[in-house]
Length: 134
Image (cartoon, rainbow, N blue to C red; front, side, top):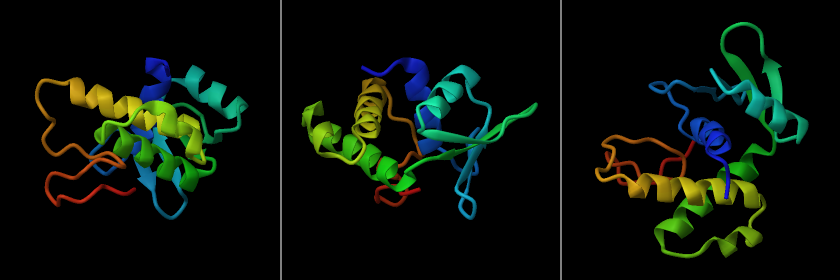
């Protein structure tokens, strides 16, 4: 099970959009926002993230092996939606990302009311009916 703070960090990256607290720059592939610096530092040390700018204010980071992370996160969401168990994580390029997506799907599904207009990588977009891709 992934801790709430860790899940929040990586989910905030997957929710990045123009209307969210975390932004994503397509050209530079950088994420900017106000993150828990202790969690960011831990994942920098583990090699999952790279710090671009960490001065006063928002932190800018890169997600290493972003393509693998995105595909595995979306696979976790998809398998959770299909009712599969988390053992499918072993078959992904990034089992950690699969688990984050899997657990996040279940957190969203627990809510009594569906969040209208919710945008997150791997989740179906209510407006288009398509799976959102970052």
